[in-house]
Amino acid sequence: VISAFCEIQYNLNSMAKVSPLVGGVIQRVLRDVGDQVNAGEALVELHSAEVASAKSVYLSALVARDVRRQASDRETRLNEQNISAGKDLLEADAAYRTSRLTASNLRQRLVNLGLTEMEIAQVERDQDTSARLVIRAPFGGTLIARGSVMGEAVEVGSELFTIADLSTHWLELSIPSDNIGRVEVGQTVEAAFPELPGASIRGSIIWVDTSVDPRTRMVRARALVTRGTTR
Image (cartoon, rainbow, N blue to C red; front, side, top):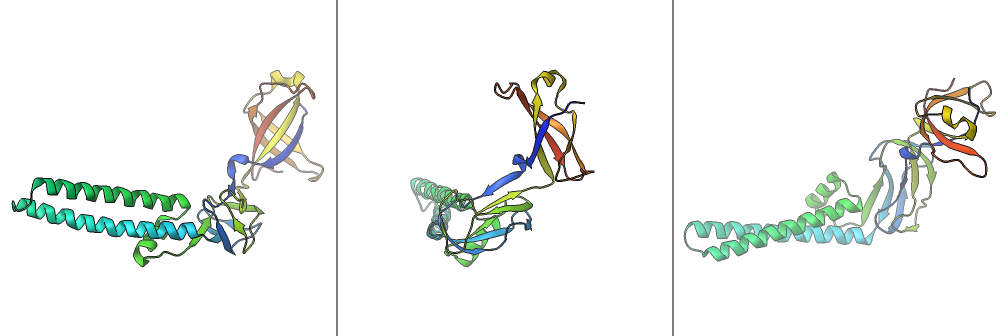
């Protein structure tokens, strides 16, 4: 048995800061700290002029694409009847392909701003140019921190929520350096805390540092704990 100091913390590989990809003003905060949420669930509604502009430009590009398609189809028919010159057909076809590319790029811009496929389909169907943008949970988990208030102006990267999957945690270990040769990935760890009298937490080592802290003469290591391993 090797004794070591440890502290428990969130699994940072299963935690995320929920941030807007565009600036705006918070219209509604839909969830709160402690709530369990599913992947894609709405957390915050944002009012963003940039989103409205992106939707409008995209819809205009769709109109231009349809016009170019009709022109290309017309030139194709005329060319088949030997009425139109081949040059006109090539120009019409090139213009149509360019308009398709433009519309595709503008659609991707909406995706990059955070709109889902369903929301983009609604924009196309309803000719929606509203400034509303819904910020959603990137995965299922628990909201452990909140930084959003209704009416607040936020920028790209502002931390609206922090979400974590609490099914796993990390145990951060500090092991005396004279035991370094006896510690390796895969070994079982059992931890006890004064706050949990009579209970212990079990996990397995997933990482061992390759250097020794020159001040404390300790080696850092990390163990992964899965929910349900407390006894």
